[in-house]
Length: 377
Length: 209
Ligand SMILES: [Zn+2]
Image 1 (tube, rainbow over the protein chains, first blue to last red):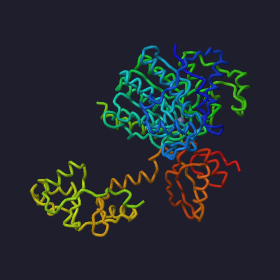
Image 2: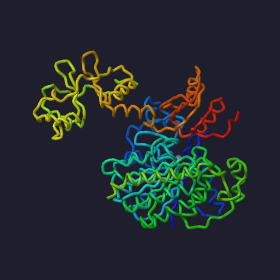
Image 3: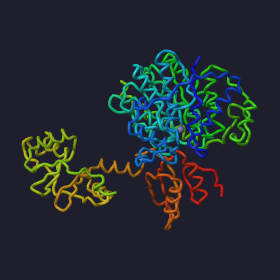
Image 4: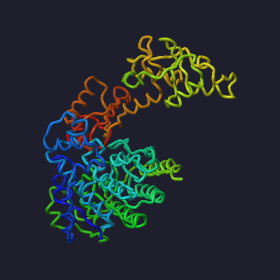
């Protein structure tokens, strides 16, 4: 059975009513799971300490975040990415981010200690947070903290990122690391934040050939996405032989997501999650840490993450959404009204450039595999 | 962007009587490919790793000995640039003459060197992927004040602009591509659309107005 990690304090990571990164998304997942008759009994962890954070962040950066969080003004805040539209300064944000990072780190500790194989952290996934920069709604890189802990316990870690945005923070932090493979599948940086994540970003030094990026064309659909995922992750894991998978499960590659342009459906997400679970079974003896991530449509994200929960627990995917849940979140869900957990048939009009997009993505995978082949000898 | 912002200041230089083998060693040690040759206060030439390899190759029609002075193999006279020249001027000279570097002179004094790689770095900076950013593309009517109206709107949203590229798009119109410090470019696109701008990316629903 997977271990589930969550603490109510995660809800304090709230960047404001207008901000897309709403803690309401997690509330909606928990409520949906309960209404589906699941008795949730999550493991609670404590927040990470400042000391813990220094494993992946610069000390001056951490001090600046904590000072801003305590309401102190600071001239250097802007240079750390604080006080921007994406990362506004909100009282208590530092502590809230440490609660979330604490959950992800706890998941890694349980896996490293052999107390758990499969862990689902119902929060976190702050993959844009850099060593010295707040970015893309992220302050502290919980994923990097978890990976660093696993590496310190002599585990080789494969990081897999299916969020629609490039996992730039995690990649940056482990760019020269030989014990960490990073794989990111995302909408091309030509079109989408943060602008990085190109096939030539292969890592440096001992990390060369271990940082892989697949930029996908806007309007990429499920089959083309899945083909890229399969064609890259299987040979990469064959070569790298990880001990643990760490997976960022952002839901923003869904076609209704307001921040990006890929065309996945909830059915595609189910297929992706089942595939990753199979990879964990084949390559890491089932040891895998899953976190949440981006996902900005209230109509979509709770359903995708409920599906993630069900897949990881080997539970059947029910067809209907519970009436009580639909009623409770009616305002957030908007119209037209939903009735099923999965997307309906023909969820979006046909993509006119489908053939071209599929070819372009396949070529991108070819180029990446070509480029990396010489480092995989 | 000016040459002085991208040049390597106080470059390593050599005298014209420096032996070829010594110049080659300096290039290897410093991991550089170009050495200005200075006599007294005056720049008299430039020697590149290619000059040295050609001069000492057995395939050369007039091979030089490793101990020969670089004056025998250096390129001269030298094209130069000034610290306050725009980088596009420096780039154009390098492109037209097909050369890989320009020494930077302030009066007679050598103050820096600019290479093709520096120009590429500048291009990367100008296109704005140096900081995490989203992309927005707008078609503007080619008339005074349009770009100002656009950037003012971004300022109101507290959005940092990391780069702006503009180029002509047919007659009387231009395309402007901005990299801005936000993930949420679609919310921004809708606001721009409402303000009457023609937004080309990200794709937005028809304007609310
Ligand atoms: Zn995302």
